[in-house]
Image (cartoon, rainbow, N blue to C red; front, top):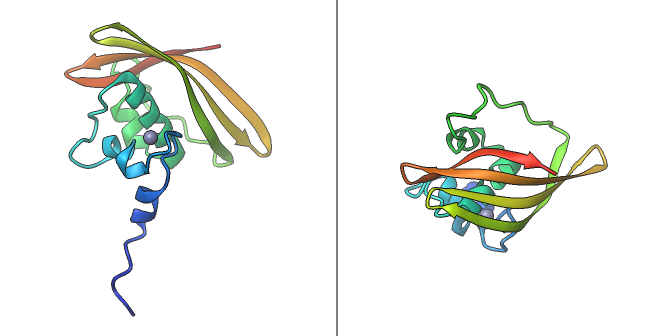
Length: 139
Ligand SMILES: [Zn+2]
C-alpha cells in the first residue's frame, strides 16, 4: 500500500468554498473554522460567509462560537437531514459603526425536492475583536 495518499480531509480543503467566492475552502472560510486564525473573520461579511459554510459542513461548534451570547439559543436546532444548501448570494453589507454591521443575503436550499429561498438581513456585533452573529430579519 502506498502511504503517500493525502488524508481525506484535504479534499474538502481544496474544494471551492461552499460560500461561493470561488476560492478553495482552506483559503476562504476554512481559515476561520479551524487553525491559528479560528474565529478571526475580519469583517461581518466574512463571518456571515463562514457561518453559511459552517451550516453546509455541519460545524455546529463554530455556529455556536460565532453566535452572540445574548441571542445564542441554548441548543442548536437539529439540522434537517434532507436539507441541501445550494448557494449563497450576499446582496449588501453595511457598516453601522466600528462594532456593528449588517449583511443582507439570499441562501438557497432544497428539502426533498422542494426549493427554498431564505432572504435575511443579519445583524453582527464585534466583541473583543471577534465578529459575532446577533440576529436577523427575514424578508
Ligand atoms: Zn468561504
